[in-house]
Amino acid sequence: MHTKKGFETTSGFIDKCSYLLSPLASDLEEKSKRILSGFMVIFTAPVLLIFSVLHLLKADYPLGIFLLIAGLGLAVSIALLRRFKSGIIFFRIDIGFIGLLFLFLLTESGPHGYMAQWLYVYPLVTFFLLGRNEGIYYNAAFYLIALIFLLFQDNIS
Image (cartoon, rainbow, N blue to C red; front, side, top):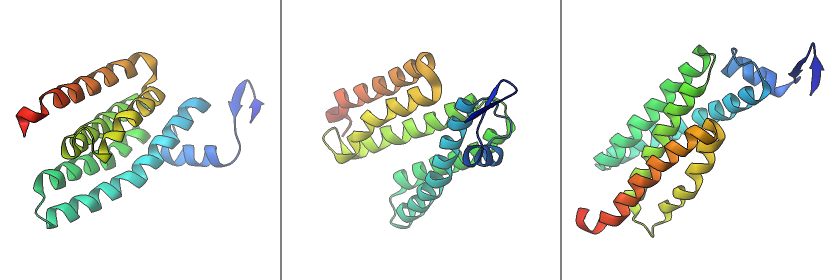
């Protein structure tokens, strides 16, 4: 990292990836967030779409349709990353889709299932991408919905 006319810049990987994923990003932190988010979407969306097709072929329609919606939502959101100077819209959309996916996985596996681990991962990503103030709102909504499900799961089944 070196300083050029008062701006922090990097040479190499971050600048090249930043130009491909987000030509409008200005500072290093915003570039890093956009690169991480972009790569996560690039790798996650195809996996979700493939799994959705597999579940739809096995006639597991609720999970298949949900994975299809989440995969398409993530794939379309990458267009927003290049279009807007602020990546916050992109982050909000992706965090919302991923939160819904994690809650759906929790409902499928139950509170002691292996998919309950996402209750620990979600806050880290949310606070990293959205910051402390907005991350609190997303996490509060996420955990409130999870708590309601866990309290009433015996009545739902």
